[in-house]
Image (cartoon, rainbow, N blue to C red; front, side, top):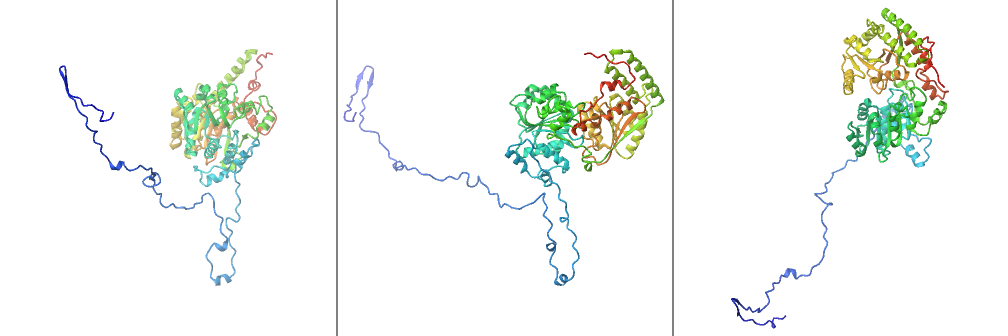
Length: 590
């Protein structure tokens, strides 16, 4: 509606209200702003964001200094090795130049990783063929280590790295733990692996952690906790590249560990003889792990029979060796997967081990108690007839062995008398000794008798948390000259290379267990010869058992040298009965 059309309204009364008419004469005033009248135009302007200060700061002048490590320039030619001589000297006859070291230097053999015989892909073979020599990695300090590994240890590392299936069976004391750690460390650095699991006996987990801090301080690791809920998180959530768990915890978590979603690039078994029983829950749990590589470490892959090795290979490479395979074929089938070195092989790197079998004559009281116990025992065994068992014979053997240690009535001991003489020599020279026994009771008696030598005890009755401090005290305290150990607690995984004397107060049934005990002291890091004294009571059961077991020490070596089927390492039933003049024999069925 236009303005003209708007009628003018007059005021008129409408009841009690009055209406006033207002005339809209004009529009409201419009104000003009000149700056809005100008046409709008779009433009682009550069903004200082991440290309100028203060977000970017100069690093200053970079020093491009070149350094060389791990390689030595060859000696310069003689004529360039000193300033020019005056002309008068040049006219004089020259004396013969001494030979420079570089001239007659013998080239050191380089140690490299080699592809395995079953590695067929060219890229896989080139991966290892093009790797630098291992000795150069450590000599050149590309990887810092506390000290340079021995050549045979570098060979062990070169053996492990390219293999998906490997059994490192070095004799105890040659540093299998360090070899495995360095191999894992190199593979982590090279990106070959991203996750690894180490399985070890519970007492050795602490030792593994200590060795990891020594040989791989840059490699993060964690130990599975004791609480089930925390272990579940370690299995499912934790992304730590290297994990450690003991056999007992793994067995309890077997169902969880077998989850297909849990995978490790490498699984390492320490003391792999723990899975020699194929049907045991521990062995089943280990084999159920999903993994890319299977490594096993053990100094005694055969403790009793060749089947021990077969069952270990059920983890290392399932299907490679079938149960019942003749030992000669076992050696052929596993030759590319086993590396075994003894101390004799690396004698130049190890001080000698001196073993003396010391026969002692029983005291009169011991002899009387021994003869009476043996005669009465044989009569009782013969009276059993065909109900006799190996357990009956073992009961008599154990009783006689205990009498060889101490007379049950007077406490007399020919072994203790000789041991006191030997310990005087050990203490006077400032050395330390380990004494092993099959039982705890003799160790308790010895602790009192050897009080002036500062004895410490390490056996099954010592709480687990107290054991490491005991070993630390034994190493650090110069007044603690002797450590009393049981075979079961001290024969595996301990590093006591600061000890120079080992006494076997009584003998174990299996020579492999004795060797493990001895090698707690005779191992890498030992600087002095180790003297091993094996006590043996003259004209007793101890001599008969020692004769049988000594003949069985060659079993493992025979197997590796592809000999015919070896005998059992332990005592057979016939050998047990042959220890005494027993006519009775158990009744056979079938």
